[in-house]
Image (cartoon, rainbow, N blue to C red; front, side):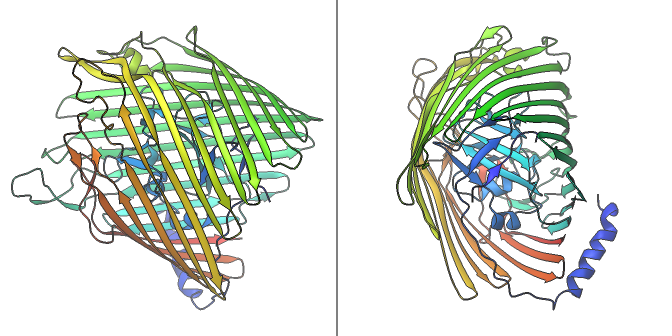
Length: 637
């Protein structure tokens, strides 16, 4: 069976009654146990069928949050999931604080986050905080590698956030508590109304993050408590879908708000920095079929507001933007060929503070052509995409991507992909006062990857080689006493990624072993100025290796897992003279499930940083020692 993921159109008092009901149910159903074995199966190869185009995992890999990991990380954040994987390095500025991704030597700006096919990064700084995305009843995947069909930009990866329309339950409530004042709740409703699908999700995530740590930056290395680090996120998601005859309509809403206190670094005693984010995202999608021809239209509105204050430094700033995305496309397909023509329009209406002078409208127009072919026996197929954009009346270099799959033996496959990429400067890069540079050129690059894999019913092995060269990278450098955005860097990244997974079961026992990681180099290939000591040195906050091993055991309704992460040292100075040491993090997870008629209750206990390791991911940003999470999940089918 082939799984199709559709990307297109796709807090304490209020929950008191439900919380009590859950706990009562927990003890009432304690003896109502089912001998069902919790088994894990490999997902078949995924075809990403975006309702506006068939993207493809042709030549590239899609990394999924599978069913078991979804149970482990329920009610947590996307960044917490990715931190536990071997392939991704999360630049964590502190528990509950800003989390961005570093993958294959690329910057956070070169990764996309797509909600139902639309990028939701900030138009001002071009990044996205992965700690702002809760893991609830949604599908999450990461497309590893660039794909020009995904709004053109992005050189390393794309996080795909889409509704899960095939959930087998009508109601779900989750509650999680943990160390340092952590308290998460979420509620999911899925009423059944004939041909109409409706999903409603509400969530709240709160934490004090007041953990103890040893401050090695002060004389005597005193033990301190992290202060001014409280975080709160809450939001509402609504998804609607209806199908009649040959027409599909979808409506989506995502309202999200967050409030974060930003703690001081280890070299400072006080902090008065606070940040508030407010996001409203709306989408309308329509699709109709006429024989082998499909026409689709998607309209999206995004409102993003950020308020930052530092009362000590007397810094106050507010950024507000309105964005409109319009996407129209025609598709034709038969058994072997797929063609698509697509027109994308993107308008930004920025409202910054008085220190920036911006155009009233920022305009971007795109034309995309796609062809995909596969043989009748599906042993091999290829995918070609061409993209041409005009941004603010400036033509961007054409983008090409060619990829293919070849199933050369039974259960064995080869994938390959190559193409050029680009990233256009953000509004801050262009217009920030003082230091913005309106003459910046887009970043350009060329990358390719090759994948050798073998997948059978109970094990999978995969080896990936990747390489990428990028030029005109946008960096901020000092010019006299001021900093300015410039096109100066030229970088090269290459490395190997490995993924292996196997499982076997005997009677009611099942054992699962998973191993993943990478080894790679990301270096500066061009001097920024004479005698640049960063030349040919590893880029900062880019680990050379990162490995992850997970061993799991299932017995009836009991699940246990131990996980070990090896993370190499990372440099935090461009000349590689200073670095953060490598670290080995161990985590333990246990869960148990109960069944009674149409009710399913799951409990989950996690011990993180089991060996109480002292480590940092970002310089002078302490990470917590041993801590725990306990959660309960109630589903009604």
